[in-house]
Length: 597
Ligand SMILES: [Zn+2]
Image (cartoon, rainbow, N blue to C red; front, side):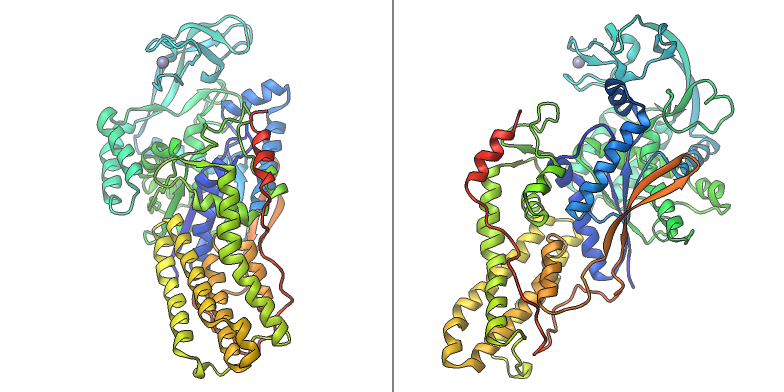
């Protein structure tokens, strides 16, 4: 029975370009796991989108003097291009600024309200008399009343890391300039304290498969501070309207932290509509057997392990009743395999200092699989890692090219030349013990590499696949077909057939990590059915206007591909070419001089 696997990936903010740290933090690991499950024949749905609301986006728009809608779309369209270029195969990458997302977020709000988890409360907020509005938290800065840091945001101090009460800020000043005064305002709060026992239970039930740093941080924070009520509306003019009469008219909207996470639910619903199958999303969302994985960076752990499950548990069966007239609970996340951070040449990645390797720029200079390889072997799964250009070059040349690329190139070219463009026509029952041994070793790889992928240990999974490529190299060294072909072509044929069949299997084992070159190799080996489907960008129209989305059209072949090769003797090959490029030493200096400028 195929499993239903939801791959939910962090929604990038529409105020900054995506760099390699973001890619290895969430998008790439999500894609690797999605591709693996597709090859296994499972029902995969991989979604994310642009977080289009929130003050970072309105601040960016104010800074550029442009309408916020224009700014979010500029970043959003860049994201679509990036994911297509890197082969991050979202079934749907959309945005939070859609009619569908508004409706789903509002239904969630109402479900929580109906179940008694929302209350209203008055508080003091900074108001600008000159622009006649309450200012969003990030628009007000001042001195931290805890540590004395002079450039603290009114809601959070980046120096001591404390969440601040805006009205206690010392010497507050507006980022727009002009005077500030405290005024009373009223907001809706999500009563997280009532949901704390449920959240604890949720985490404890997942303790056996959650990563230690993720579980530790989540339970530790609840232990230390408890879950406190948190406001879910704000005085804003860009975002999702509050579905309660009078509130939006009073200049208030749903707070972005509350609605952006609802994208994990709204995107599958939009995806269903785009395929004209309105109920398909239920396979992942109204199904206790479905497995939901959340791929995020460590800065987002608490939102995904505590706040989002709290929203879902608080909504209970009421969301579906409001949304579809049927009382059933929604599926809860299965795992949150959050990654730590990637640094760059020993320093924190910083967009403002241009201390970054930008995703869109990187694929203009390097092949996507070379980048994906380095980001996987260096993935910050349990601790921070570092992108180092000398290491990038070494890993590319000494591992990817030397161990895997050269093996493929040597064996395929040799077969193509000596067997007239065909797989040697051998009797598979007459293979020698050494041949059978190699094929058995490779066949076992589907279990060992698969087990690591199931558990989202991606570095280890790729390491296992690389060990198998080394085993094929050793086999070639032992059997030396290059000299044997002159003495006994029939024996050499057995070796080359065996090596090609091992490579045909390895192509699948490497495919989740290196999809572009595995697809190419699949063609060289003479197969006609591609391993994966196709990505494409499309425009969608709704009541809010037109938004663009990235979509994925699955391969028409639904047969599971995660199994060892049965390569046909005498199958016709296609003219092979090299899969990877060896990089010049000069790349290291070139790249290092780009940094920080
Ligand atoms: Zn502070």
